[in-house]
Image 1 (cartoon, one colour):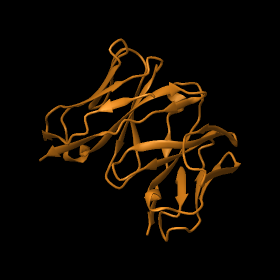
Image 2: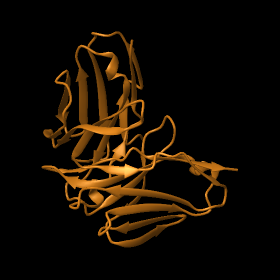
Image 3: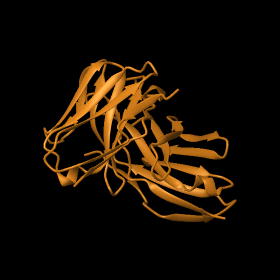
Length: 116
Length: 112
């Protein structure tokens, strides 16, 4: 049983296209996240949702739009893809918002996006 | 701007030795800390969680926390080639909600 799953695992596309990445967790967690890991391996948070409500919205281009249809799903839609968007995108989930061990985040396998 | 500093490495240690990974953080409000391990091409996975000053041991791993010095470390005893990975330090910080701020990671290479 996969705890946090993402689709697709690989995404190769042309500049200017629009694409979506989907994430699902079966851990019963309330909070989900999107991270971007660039070629230098720096893992940077993009968005966080708690019970379908956006709670973290870091400075990312507004071409990136997250959507949470329910607390088990968090999707990421990217418009007008650019070369600099090439990276690995990780979805994660956690149970708590207490600042302690409940903040443990469980990561999906990642989506490797390559923009040509 | 909350900063998390780690030596990017690579840190090379011989098999069986102790690997010492260090992390400093700028947010004095951080009270709890995570260590994650990331193998090449894989996703981060939890190694340790620590929130009290001092040492916390789990098998071959020991996390050490000194909040006064804003320093957290991870020791790996009896290092194995399978420990070769990038280790990410992540303090929990508050910015309207709790979030993990990841360091850039230290790449560890255990030489057989």
